[in-house]
Amino acid sequence: MSDRNLLLLGFGNVARHLASFYKDGAGSDRHIYATTRSAARLAELKNFGIEPLLLDGSNSFDLLEPLFEDAFVLVSFPPDGTTDATISRMAGSASRVVYISSTGVYGRHEGIIDHRTPVDENAEEAGGRLVAEEHWLRNGNAVVLRAPALYSADYGLHKRLAAGQFRLPGDGERYTSRIHMEDLARIIDAVFHSDIDSGAYPIGDLCPCTQKEIVTWLCQRLYLPFPDSIPLEAAHHTQRGNRRVDPSHLLRRLNIRLLYPSYRDFFDHKSASS
Image 1 (cartoon, rainbow, N blue to C red):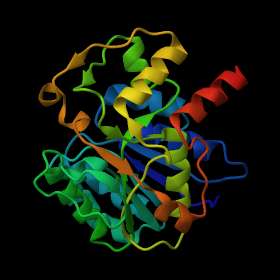
Image 2: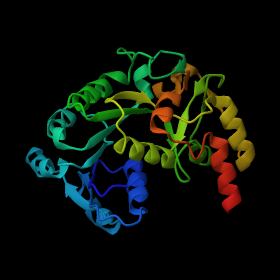
Image 3: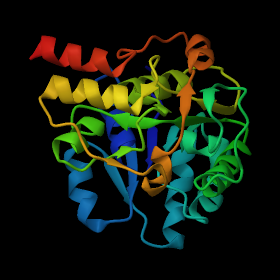
Image 4: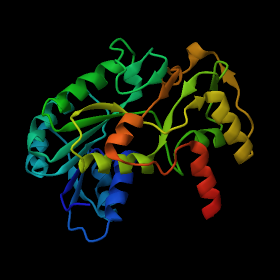
């Protein structure tokens, strides 16, 4: 790891995992900064060993500009139509910017999704995401990672099943991809330290499967009842896709191997270490 500062624009699950990954690195003198719009979160960030930046108005964006200088920057807040346009203008001085987008931008495209797959500009989720991507890519030092469903020990489908909050969309035969947030953090770090071309890349694990397959496996593994189904058209648009993400192009370019090539690998590892 280098000793460049890390600037986290937004501090959700992805940023938290990346911050933990960086804090675990030995011999680093870097500073980690993170933005928040909530004064109530300032103490939480400080306790996490992060220097918080409260963004409570347009003028507060000015305090960010010097922090971009030669820094690694992660952008993981959802697009709101204005913030990306404002802050991305400062990004030219950064060492590298990674913007976390969504595979939702592929919309109605079905089957294998790779780095050559065009986006679906008419997709319900695409509009704001694609505009935000363009703002960050404009500086020439940004890499967009289009992520599928994210999960970790305390977040993801297994938690929704355990809480009785998941309903199987349609017959469950549509394909879906996912990635563990620890692997996502490692990919982000690898991008920071790479000379990979600026652009947009889909990411995911190596084992896309149908929703029914993963739900069945999780319910059996965790001794949970199989959930009820709902009509496909009643499901959230993020659950109506039928995509198998192929991340091999990016993983080869970064020379990185996933810790959890499939959801099963994570739970097998979790059982072995408990």
